Length: 584
Image 1: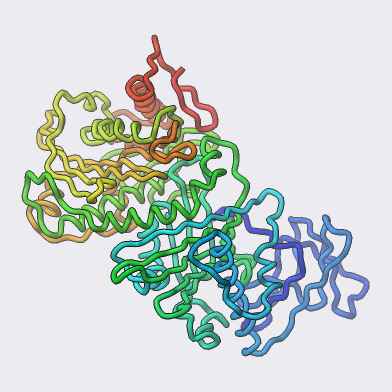
Image 2 (image 1 turned 45 degrees about the horizontal axis):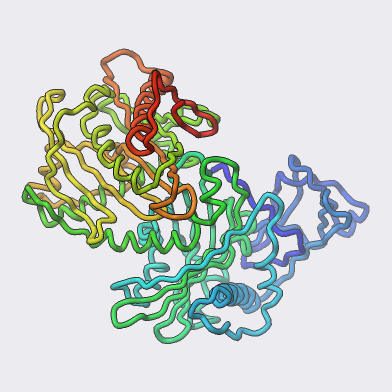
């Protein structure tokens, strides 16, 4: 994984963990023998391409005792010392870091004017708390936000378990903001935290990837410790703290400084939460999404809470407008299938797509991304992706693209755009959605001459103020009969190995600034499947790119005419610069 390791704070750090001493070579330092060779002192000047002898403790890299680094940006040399600690001292050190992180999260909640009225009394932890508040290095920035919400039909204890007991459940509840999560058991002193503090109920090491639905914004990679703590009866806190404080060489490009969720009961069936986001990330590169990222709308606490509430509502979807008999298990199949479709979308825009399924065949500088789908064997299959800005409200864009999306995907055969021109509306067989219509899954049917039979189109239209999706794919009659109509109970396997069966086309829509669905402009990412007959003429990347540009040009033209209200004369040409797309 190509990530940028955090260089760490420019101060003396004292590490202690459980493993035995082990020597190894780090390519970031150049070793040079000092005058005090007999005393075991080594001077190391950082050069970026050579090596030095270091020590490792529990997977951490550190200098040996009495070893010195002469940094180019400092006029003095610092010494980093290794101190041998007993098991009890190691446990106390880990416990103090966790207590300081807990104190910092509670402090942020109190300073933000939430229902937290006092900070816990945990003794003198000023040094550790000050370390959490160290200003970021040049090229980095802090993003801090707090949001509160009532979570219906979820008890406080259940909410705490959702956040700690299963990384997969946590990922599902916060998808698509959280693209990927992997949890593992804590090791070393951290596994004994509950001995030092009986209120700590669970601890897990987390690796998470956060991704916006566009190729223009790099993926954010985090590694952090998460632990759950019961503050008092009915009140819980989930604390996240970056692995930087225990493993400064972990694979990540973003730091999760003390963040978390404070949970309390709210009536007999609900809970109330305070969500605190406190992260250190790279400065935003100038592109279409700079405004929404800079205003803390893309990754802020409010979006985390909105995503959580949306997923909880989605799980309670129900059928309406039924024109066919559906099996009782059809709902779970539809939720799993459409979730997998969205995961495929997010994989295609990821900074590092899954190489076993997708190969990027355009250059990184090309604002259009073309990927080869290696998992689909029936056709020669490609995916085209591009993001552009529309001077129209996200709600208006969403409503228009719902209909356009059906035309693009449901009846596309071997990339022949002529099949998109349909004279009759497809028949709606049912809708499966939330009570507030924020998420609607619908099944459509049309008898088509192109494939001499019935074509089914499945669409999910999900809408919220931060990020909306419209995705659709074709389903065979056998699939509909087996999993939806005829009642053969089946659970869809949501995994990357089934990616060949979940290839959608569609759109992601984000507001270009504050205002949510009523913002004055929209940021749209368009993804389309391009199928070619393996028995036909050879297909190269330029041919595929030309087909994708044809679809992209058509969409932007129609958005300008029917949503923005601007019409152009003559031939419309796509002008693409740094990911921007517009008709000129």
